[in-house]
Image (cartoon, rainbow, N blue to C red; front, side, top):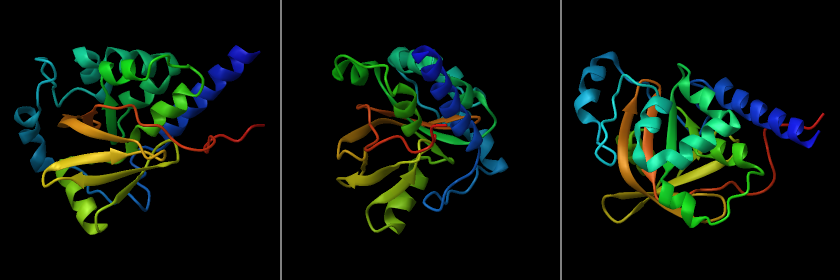
Length: 204
């Protein structure tokens, strides 16, 4: 019974992420990618641990090719959240590395789908869009996540963007602007977590 409830929660969260397709909240006023920019993406993408990240792949295809994200990809698949990241929506993902997951120590699977959804922001936020949002917000740009919570992007020095979770933990963006056909991935060095109790799903 408990296993069925957990499976139902994971499926519901995956549907929540999927249902957010392109639905950018009032916090996330990000312009969509223009067609004349698409030809530039292939050469703009960085490598991750020597592996090419291709702009004509979806987010899950690129993350699955990254040697630094095996733990993240496994967690996305186990919770069912991976399905949402293969859709035609536009998402920004703050993707923690294997080292970030290892630093957490013993990872409880309880609430994992919720924590993963907290790392996903509906809309397409490359580094330039983040910088604009930070500037327009006067230093702290609030990003509404698929989980229903808020991440805060701010500057740490003249060029480095950090992301803060609701518990006050911050993550550096180690690799910016992995362009995917359905969004953007930024590689981060910490697993950011939501605060408080679950927000999206009401119990029946």
